Image 1 (spheres, rainbow, N blue to C red):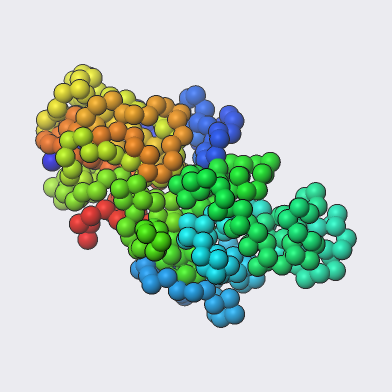
Image 2 (image 1 turned 45 degrees about the horizontal axis):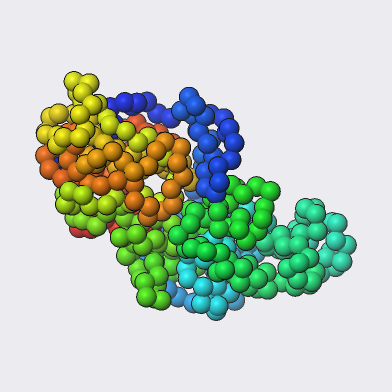
Amino acid sequence: MNDVGSATAPRRSLRLGVIATALTGMLFLLCCTGGTAAFFLTGLGGDGEDGDSLAGMGCGPIRPVDIAGELPRFTEYGDAQVRNAAIIIKVGQDLGVPTRGWVIALATAMQESALRNLANSRVPESLALPHEGVGADHDSLGLFQQRPGWGSIAERLTPAYTARKFYEKLVKVPSWQRRPLSVVAQQVQISAYPDAYAKHEELASKLVDALAGGAARTVEINGKAVCNAAERGEIAASGWTAPISGDVGSGFRTADRPSHNGVDIGAAKGTEIRAAAAGRVLVARCDPDDRGRRDCDVDGYPGKGGCGWFVDLLHAGGYITRYCHMVVQPRVTPNQIVPAGEVIGQVGSSGNSSGPHLHFEVHLRNDRSSRGAIDPIPFMRERGAPLRAAE
């Protein structure tokens, strides 16, 4: 199967722009010139067996967190903060909360307190109790910056208590496992900055992986956490899912196709294509072929050029995913926010294509051009949503 490596227009990289306003839940608006102020995450570092190397290990079996044992190191956080993360996960395990909840809880605490158990200068009694820093946000306390309605001063400065209260409210949020992390966290926290949680999702997933045996790569199926099975609309705890079920054919920038900036996944015409993660629609249109024709409602052919009907989605962390060769016009429109697993179109053979399949790309740093493209196979595997026959 043949297809174009990236859409013909526009082919330029997205430039960093200005945040116009907050959209509900997940992402900031891109300014009208195509700039973006989407989220960036710093990488993990450190020597030896740190959190980053542990996060990349295989999935399962999920191990119970030992909060008293030796824990991995993360450059972003000190030992006390990592231990607080372990406590949050352990409480989730003890309560039987699915693994997606652990990621949401960690991302929330990362935003609220940087995983520090904070006293408050406006609550003098809190200063006499064990704490790891002093905040001054109203009368908020602890890892989740909970106010008096959540419990007493002593309770709100007890990490296990605050985590339990967070989970108890989290599981009451409708469809919480499928909705964007920011939307769900905001339903629990009622924050003045509802969009801020999403930027912590990837690092929270790495913490969960490192502390609980790759648990962010699991999806809950029939009440059990199953590794590397996020497809057909099932969402991994990391927040990702495979766009379609199918075997990978042509790979990323192979010797015979060095400009092939994605992978081809075989599937029957009309197969539903799903958003690989929650995101904002950047582009949803017919890509002109090499002669400038916009005839995506008919099957294409090798050498025609163009992506056919295609969609680009922007995700937290500055990731962009691309979905090419749809059979008909996409089901989404620019600026639309879509949850992970949302159907965005159907497999076809429009554009530069020799048969029905999905051409799927992943880009870094908000860069829609070929410069930003990376191999989707290891990227998706690390998130518990591996593409079939990818090894």
